[in-house]
Image (cartoon, rainbow, N blue to C red; front, side, top):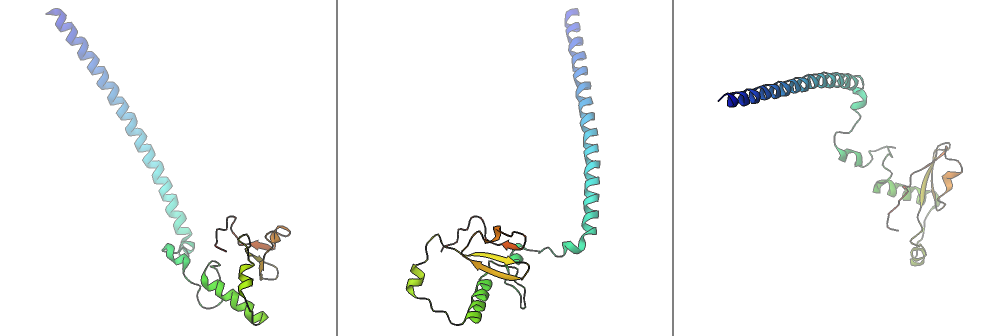
Length: 156
């Protein structure tokens, strides 16, 4: 009977030690959670202050992603260079500048799959340049802005 009491006392002391250790670990976790909460609160407050400071810039951000792809408004708002309206405007300007243009079937068949037009903007003269020379902007990259993507997968 005495040996049973000694074994139960040892088990009780081990259980008390384990419970004390687990309680201490939970206390440390709680302190860490409190500290992280305070740090996150500081980050949140600074973010809110930054948003309020730049509220005017935030109003310029479109509310929906579809707003980025709307057709250009009336006037000279040509921000969307990929739009069909921009292509139509470019063709209209070319015909107005050079007059009638006749395209025959041989003109279409002479265009190879590797042929495509590079679009550049000369920032000095404010001119749009359409060229078959794909390295045109490499000579003067400061004044020539290239709008062609590196992987042009357009059907030609």
